[in-house]
Amino acid sequence: MMTAQYWSHQSGRKDTEMWNKQWERVDRFLKKWKLIERGDHILLGISGGADSVCLARYFLAKRESLALNLYAVHVNHMLRGDEAKRDEEFVREFCRQWNIPLHVEYRDIKKESREKKCSEEEAGRLARYECFTNYARQHQCSKIAVAHHQNDVAETILFRMIRGTGVQGMAGILPVNGEIIRPFLCLSREEIIDVLKELKQDYVDDSTNKCEEYSRNYIRHRILPEMEHINKKATVHVSELGMQMQELLAYITPKMDALYKEKVVHRENGELFLEEQVFYEMDLFEQKEILRRMLFEICGHQKDISLVHIEQLLTLMGNQEGKQQDCPYNVLARKTGEGLVLTKKSKSVKSAEQPLENSLENPLEDSLEVEFSILPWNGGKVAKRDCVKYFDYDIEAFVNADYGTHFAEAISDITGGEGTYIQFVGDLNSVSHNEWCDAADEYFAANTNMKKLGRYETGDDTTSSYNQTKELLQANPDITAIEGSASTDVDGAAQAVDELGVTGKVAVVGTSMTSIARNYVEKDVINTFSVWDPAKAGQAMIELAINVLDNGEAPDALNVEGYESLTADGTVLYGNARVDVTKDNMDEYDF
Image (cartoon, rainbow, N blue to C red; front, side, top):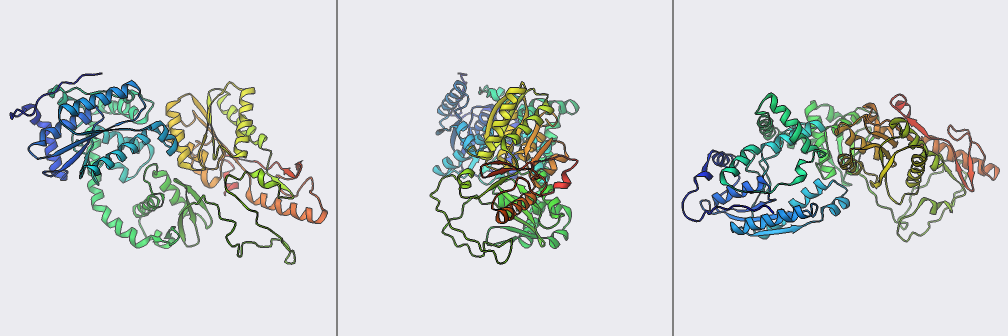
């Protein structure tokens, strides 16, 4: 363990090194943003790293003169073994020496990452702030001080710019956000290190900060240093740009608050509605800002919502009635004759006891009688094949094994049969999704040198496939292909591929729809996707029903494209209705 040197602050004499020009800059910054008041109870998040230790030393220097009550929290993420124990012991000793009450929290971040379907970095951030909030309440702390600095601001702004952002994203990191305060946004990382050297104060170093597989670390160690070759103050200037954006937002935000309240309709069922005529009376900035706010509100999150999602809604508003767009966090955007509707999609199953009023329409002759019964459901998952036994016939667009093999062949053609691949399924219990992936596995094993990293569940959620793809690509740079099963899998994966700048290096293939995947097909991020035409599938079902009613048995062919030849397996009939969609034919399958 790294041992620390401590210097007494209780002798009554001033430590002149503490009152250097950097401390005075922090004093001015605190005063400008009104971050603390005399007698405040302040919670310090201390990791043991240079930034948080330096922030603690600043508040220790102010503790007596401002009558501050200081408390500390250290979160052990249980990820780095002995190194994490070293960090914890360092913080314990630091707080003991300086008489700061300390709470140490242990969180299994790897487990929480899996449960929340996000990266370990994001799961760790969420866990830290949850611990900060809980411990602050216990000690009546009105402020939680964290040690973000100018380099963090510059990295954040550049990361958002690369990924796609707007004015809000360019604002960087706020000096105050509720009870969170950030006193060091006026200092650079180099200035913080210089202060610690003057104080002869040790700290610990997180080895993962040097890993350039993480996007922020790459920006920190590669991009910012290159920018500083052009101008040594590049980091400071980017950070100052963020501050200017915050001033701009302080002016704009109240006006947009009023506009949003006036124009966006909150329906009783939870939907958000924006009238088309009202939308086109706004200027472009107002349009984008209103759409951004609508997404934030109905998603319940701001993270992972980027400029691309706002652009998708702009495009949707210009489309004809009936068009749809899947959005992050299980949100569906619909274009109606009146305007735009955002809905939180429900995954619930209606009870069989609910009335079925007006739920059946006769698609054939008016004189045809339809008999039906409601079958009991006692909970649990209902597999598709559990239901087939109740059907006279089940017609499928294709054989699942053939469909999965086709994906593997497409990936092999793109990658040359080399590298590592990953697979996404909407549900690990989905029969069809797993049959597709199993067939692909068999093809890869028999015909290529490709290795499988794993099969991952996305819950049919774009955000989940995006987060998992991003984390997997950062941790495994040898990945060359992604196979998606749920219609949203390839869209989320493509977003991560696009943001990480590996388009052309990682093949993205799978099931989707044009309404979901168009943007990334046009950008050549999604190489190809496959689908079946729901209109033709419906037509095939109706024609099959008519044939069975007329002839008493199923035919071996239908007069429907993709179903001209049927293969029977008992009462299950298979067509050959797979459609491969690329940039060239996408408009022919615009659903």
